[in-house]
Image (cartoon, rainbow, N blue to C red):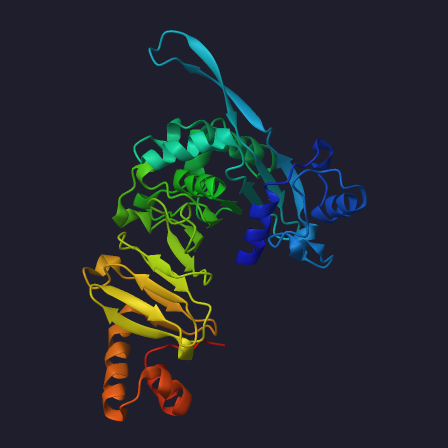
Length: 369
């Protein structure tokens, strides 16, 4: 099974410009050649998202580059009056790799990389333009169809037949960053049959643009899809729009964060602090998180206005989790302790750490081993 960090590596790898001759080679062979000849654009193994691939024992290096899309796709469509046929060229890039052990095929879609991609971003941002009509989404369907027909176990006559047949149990997955994440989530949507209990082929994305409105999915159904998006709390693209599936928010502690969640979906925020170092506070209609001894703070807007605005789960750096139902109970327990002792919570953390830890353990659930 491909791990989340490995999906991150693959989503970053989608930005590299591979040679045509790379098709059929393992990543190990490609990386060794690149380290020797430096002949590929945007293939810098010093980048944080690719650094792990420098390790020759990394299992991803055994993956085979099955196919790579052309950088542009042309398609023939009717003009807006339906009178004449015109040819449209769309920017698009995707790679397909295969795990040699499990035979799983992973599609990694490239994200926003040029001005042509911004056109697609703008259409998604409109929230009213159907994804099926967008050029890059049509290119994604075509590339997945062609690749699976060539390398998959069954050959299908057309896209409709393929996407109807494959789904949650298929040995396929999608990943991507930004616009690439939106394309990955879109393919999960296209292969899902919610009325039959099939949530679609798995996608793991990073700061993906939310496409729920563009595919006509309601906020009630959006979380039913087999997709997980990892979003940086300060990335406006990754927090925009209605996401499909589950959203895991990773807090960027470089400045104060302000979160808003009106979707009512099952969201999770990852905090870069231990549970002992996180203070929850009731601040008007908002929930505020402070970290003692740090300038870092997070505000969850309208937390007390409606349950739809509550983040369902917070996860600390040590793996402990607290649900939204326990947060208010912890705030009350902290308030009672401060009244009884006359200490602020920051003072208690320093002077009575055992008592503080005892209170915290009642509300934070420790990770299971």
